[in-house]
Length: 153
Image 1 (cartoon, rainbow, N blue to C red):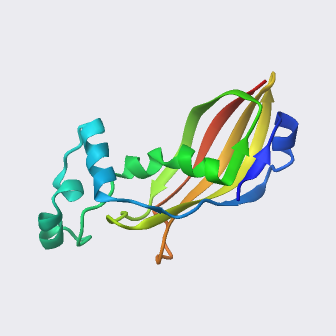
Image 2 (tube, rainbow, N blue to C red):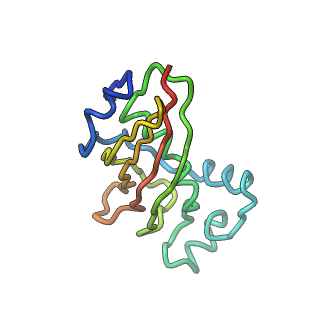
């Protein structure tokens, strides 16, 4: 169940707090294939299951790192629902470290901590520490800090 926030001042109340976890999301081969087509990244480690089993250190096809990053807004909205918005803008990836590959059919979920919220004349600049967890693994797929801008009504 997601946390519902309706204003900049309400968002500020959650600074320096862990906000929770998203639901598990399965990374499918179809999703990987569609991402490859959209980004023109056709490396065999993503698309050729037979070759990946035989030659890859991962033993299976793996998701593009940026595919997993592109899931951030979707997974974030499972943790926090921001209401009364004109719009939300992806503003910055301050740091991001890929710690391990995500094999096809893996389940991932987002863990998020709100680090800070700045008031930029009615626009909330929210810095969020993110960790993409992989089911069954102690090591996350990635860790980083992202920033969203929230233009409240």
